[in-house]
Length: 295
Image (cartoon, rainbow, N blue to C red; front, top):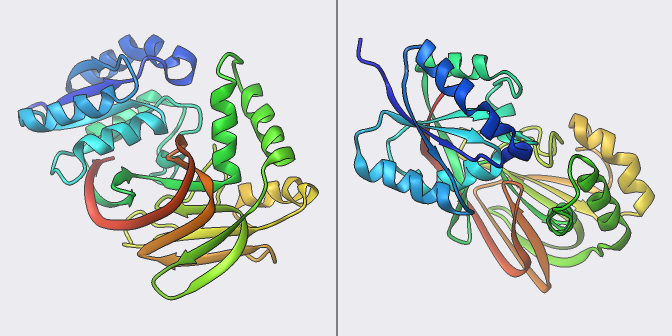
């Protein structure tokens, strides 16, 4: 039986350099499971996209493995979306939100590699925001502001940075008046946060769009209206469990197209990475069966 020839695109900085330390073990385990792997390490933001494009253009790989977090996955997807080359996952990030949709272990490299060696292929949907691909979701408003604040605090290590970023955002972020258009409706609403999901988990394990399926050709949308600071803190545990969908402040929608207009501008993150500090117009669509994965 011919060995699968796989390119491992690894972000050595994922999860505070954990990925770099894992690299020798990953290569050894891939060999143990009968896979032929070549390590390609990223050196800067955007490099993973270039490496994925290069692998697709070369045409002599049986697939790409992403060893990193949600941000690295997003970069690679933007280099290979629409191609027939399969993508596999060794989760090494902090949040690892997308792989939770695949029921993959987020802290067991051996089991992730075992899943790759099983060679099961599946087609999944991808989203597009303003001509940029995403695999998991888009956050608009408060949660995007958290990502922006966390980026400012890069010198602080560990989970403390997110606690500080969340606190600053809850204290200072102001809801926006938005015009929203979907397949079925148009609404004007004062929004604290909007999440548009292909996947269901966002923000490091919050089950914000719990009805999301990555192969149903639909976007799932969670709109949270203006709330008091206390309400945001109080409801956070329900959001983590996915039991928030019937709260009075929450509106859940399904659509193939999502458009948003904001006179003031809104912060946006894509797959957990800051996309823009202020966008006035957003168009998000779903592309069915746009990516093949090996899991």
